[in-house]
Every structure is written in C-alpha cells, then in structure tokens.
Image 1: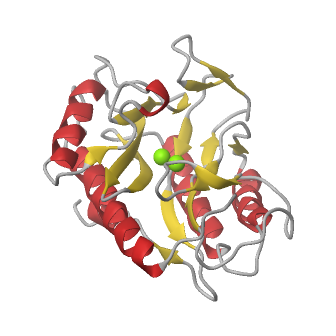
Image 2: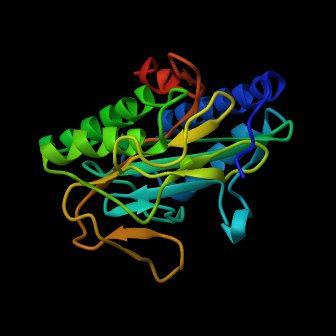
Length: 255
Ligand code: MG
Ligand code: MG
C-alpha cells in the first residue's frame, strides 16, 4: 500500500532530507586518502546525533553501522571497516536519518583524490541519470518512466544498470511502496501521484550489470569487480515539476 504524505508530513520529511544532505557533506569534508571508512562512519553518527536525530540505518534489519560505505566494486550496503581509502578510489556514502518520526535517505559517490577519466565518467553519468529520473517523477506519469529515463541515459554510454536493488518510497518507514527500479519501460508500472515521496537511486556499473552478495550477507559486489557508482535523492512527486527534497549542494558548494 502506498502511503500518500500530507503537507504536514512533508514539512518533517524535508527536515530529514536536509539533515541527511548535510551529513553527506560533513562526511565528504573528511574524505582524504588514508582515512578509514569506519572513522567516517563515526563522524556521521556524531553529526546526526548532535541534531537530536538518530542514524536511520543503524540496527535497520540488523545493519550494524550508521553509513553504508561501498568502495569501488561494492555497489551498495558495504560495511564501514578499517580499510584506508586511497587515491583513485571511489566511495558511495549512503546515509539515513530518523527525526521527528520520519526518515531521510540519500547517497553520494565521492572520488578519493584524483580518479581516472573512466571512473570520473562513471560518476558523472550516474549522477546525471539520477536527474534524468527525477524529471519523470511527476503526477500522472508511471514508475516505469523513471527507470526508463535512467536506463536509456546510461546504457548508450556503455554502462549497465543493477537490477537487484531499487529505489523506494520513504516516510515513517525507511522503505515504503512503491519500488523504484532504475530500468523499465515508459508508461508501465505504478501510477505516480501527488503525495508520493520516493528515493531515486541509480546504481550503475562500469562493466556488467550482474552482482553477488558479500560473505557478510550485506555488501553487493559487481560480478566482474569493476567499479560501481550510486547517487540517491529524495523526491516529492508533484504536478508539473517534482520537488527535490534532499540536495548535493552542501557537498558541491563546499569544494
Ligand atoms: Mg534508499
Ligand atoms: Mg540510501
């Protein structure tokens, strides 16, 4: 069942969206070669709690950390660890918040120092595909329009779309209906209506689309061990123009 949000709900969801956006920027400020992903996780947890909010992922389904830290060939759901980030790595930082009874959830893939041209192209394409998807989050359209927009943008560039993991509705629960795949067909799927709040989160691979599950039961890894990128924003479906609730501006205006 899809829970449509009221304007009062949206006020609280926006607060989470901004908090999660600022947390990603706070983490980003500390991403340098040599820092461990576990150190970054603690920075995020402290930051979120300093606002009286809670980390949304910690304990969710048994997930043991504040952040999903997915380095290079890890697509999503990587565990923070003692791994020291190094020049040329990319790291998807996925963060959730719970504040005033609602959830926030967004992700950004950061380059560590200088990355190869090929890797930068993957990051650029994945982020651009997210905005292509967002454009389609309008009332009257269909969920398939979003996935089609993402897929038809990245595939001609030689990249592939992960099928196993998808975006989702968000509200009082982190994961609500509907599912928001990053592939699909125009005009297919659930009808989009005002009041829906969704997370659009393309997971795009440099090589094959296939993935497997890490031995820890969480990490999702590319079958060919080539890089994967992941960007996620929260969007309220509206008539005409969608409202993008979370933002990368705190990250990108910081540089
Ligand atoms: Mg999500
Ligand atoms: Mg997320």
